[in-house]
Length: 391
Image (cartoon, rainbow, N blue to C red; front, top):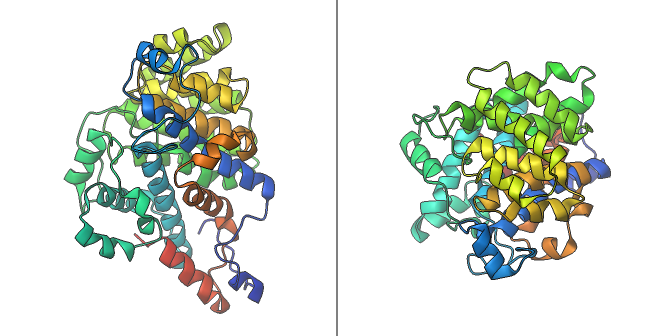
């Protein structure tokens, strides 16, 4: 059973749910990771399907630098952040089921259920909305019931797999698997912090990230890229410099069949970040980001090149391609490294679903402190069981 404290809480705890992480610094890094990804997503949303020349024509030579209207408002998130939130729900549902049942967490099953719940938000009728409202905290966030250009692979795979816990029967390597995977690294960051020999944990983190991507994306590059990002996010949150985290992820990547395409994209990103940092033309060399290894590499390049959070995100979204996904990946990495205080206030003020994103980040940071095992913990158990439905 992972990370479950079973000591009885005081009465104060019962009045203080959801639990706030006791480590303020770690809380800031976790919020930075999730909010940073959402900010990059929202900045890229208005230009997701534009060529760079069209972006410059619309926003000036500097490109888009602040939130612009998308989906009828400023600061709108897309399917990237929606699915990231449901990944977080799946990880926490698996943790809760493990803590209550005494078995190892089944992340694959829990994520499959959570992604099916996300699918409800994309197709549900008003008639069915009341039923969804009784199925966990995340489905009670009405603003999630909105289509934000979801990937056709994610939709079709989840439609095909409805009711089944299975890997996708396709050969897609679209970026829909990697762009949602940061919560896997966030979950495992606690174990990395506690473990002196972090190498022992990396295969499990990689496998979990890869497996969750495989629910919708069957191509090796679509899955392996997600495993890489999960490892990097976890290590950065645990205190490793980004460069060292990338090296550790590449070492694990080499242990997997069909890794060459993902590894080549990562190494190209590293070489370009060293030789040609902060160049839009370098992003063009790496591709458009619609496929997983390109989105991963472009996010890495921008995070490695950035002078600060804002600089890196602006670079990540101003290119001809999948701007919201590359912005989201770069935002996860830069936010995990620098914390929420690095994100410009003007972006946070207008960010859609900010409080929901913060709450999930807090739960990912605080779950090792949940008290669930004692007779006096009934209120806390009931609270989290209602918040994160068991798979």
